[in-house]
Amino acid sequence: MPAALTAPASLADVYPSPRVHLLNPGDVVVANAGDRLDTLLGSCVAVTLVDPRGTVGAMCHIVHANDSDPRRPPDPHHARCALQAMADGLLARGIVPRLCLARIYGGANMFPNQYRGTFDGLHVGMRNVARVLELLDGGGIRVIEQSVGGTGYRKLSWQVGPAAPVCTVVDPEPQA
Image 1 (spheres, rainbow, N blue to C red):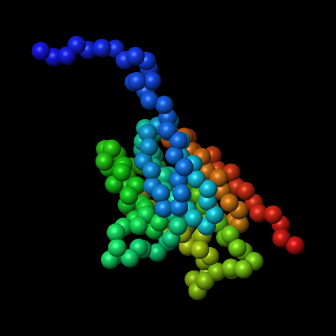
Image 2 (cartoon, rainbow, N blue to C red):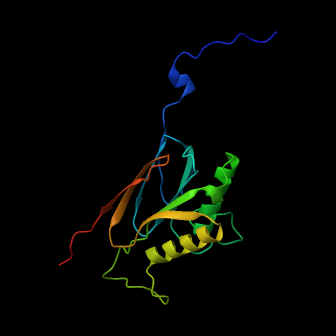
């Protein structure tokens, strides 16, 4: 005989409180609508992906543009691995990554007086941005917003859903 159905004690039993996730370099989080994802960026790049209905989203904090060592386990500090981890997490929830909308943040030149670029003319931050754009384009994922470059830190806070994250640029103090 089936057990009797009982009503939940409160709405909190049906709709759990939103969770807050602080992403550090190399972190990847897939979360539900209403959850908050926060990170602080310099030359690193954060990517957010959200499904068209705004019910599930993902964020990663990328440190390196280059691919990780194939002889080691995948490392989400690297762009390709981080984006793959996001895609895998979204697919596990029934979300097709190429149908998601992407936003990109970060990629600043944190040491403009000391570091002007490399052989390709890009500083570390813009190399990260270029690689992320290349990988997203290759995956057929549309980028709808970017706040990249410059010389300031970025504080990023996103309540998962259709709205854009709040991105605050903190410019460095002028140097004498």
